[in-house]
Length: 442
Image 1 (spheres, helix red, strand yellow):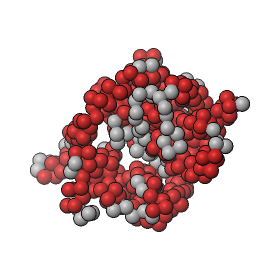
Image 2 (cartoon, helix red, strand yellow):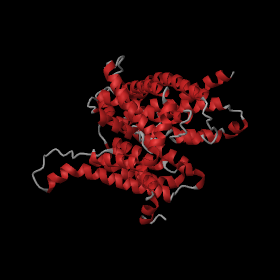
Image 3 (cartoon, one colour):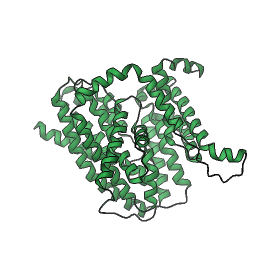
């Protein structure tokens, strides 16, 4: 009977997350938080067994990590872990290959699962040693990643201006815009952390409006202002990859996603950036596969850390939420059950990715793209008001202005992650309160 309940939890969790993943700006962590609040009485009384709770929550995160590329590619509203996919993904959409791009991210998720299963064999022995070695040095490791993000920017001018300041500005404006975005988002992060505007009863949604404004709103506004319409999409039965591309892209994505899953604050997008530079990827197919693997390992691997015997680590919002109801005792039984849930949910999610991608393609072919973008905008505003109140709209407005800077100046959108990277890095180094005092937040 318990096995049947676990299977039902996997099915319901996967289907629910697949639907939610197709709704722009609705992060699965927000949905999971509301589910836990609603089901709290059943969880505390034992009416909702722990095994079913684990299976349900793991299925939510697995399905979301596989299917959340659908709004990123077809509707142009990415979350923070999908911002790299949008450029080659949207390029594929405008070539009529949006379906193929979506399935390539799914193939990347399967590759990420393959490498994650291999890593699971050594994780109980390796992760405690990684924590022991890296723990005392976490602040400067994060600072190094921040420095790399800045140094890896490069002037993108086209040398069309004559010599002089106009040529200099044309070459360096995107770099300056990236630095400005990093700085402004970092200041916003300090404000959100040290002077939260949110009411106490929705404090757990404190960062949500900032992320929506930084990553989702700019894309929707860009769609509303754009005159382009997606061409008819071709539903291909095969994808143009070979085993070498699959293994190389999956391995690179796994490394980036694992780095993001283990280290605090680092997201799947940042992990994918590091992996992409490390492997010098230039092929769009390779890039999309690696990003699909990276975000899968980031989300799923981060939650799986909660169950690794001896690791004593919890990464991500899902781990933080479920830790209130479940404390792992280093049991290999729970660890293997979590791995089995990941495998079953991933297989079902990959099938749903194809199904939901085809449905989204039919939608954008029937309904005007601007109408879809307008509906998306209204939906985002309703979600923010419902989950974060009217105070959330204030944060949304400010963060949207910051998020529009990379759109106008074609700089790297990942610089918006300064909203977390800068304040958390400075807090770990012991300088956070000092900087907050300079900003008048204390």
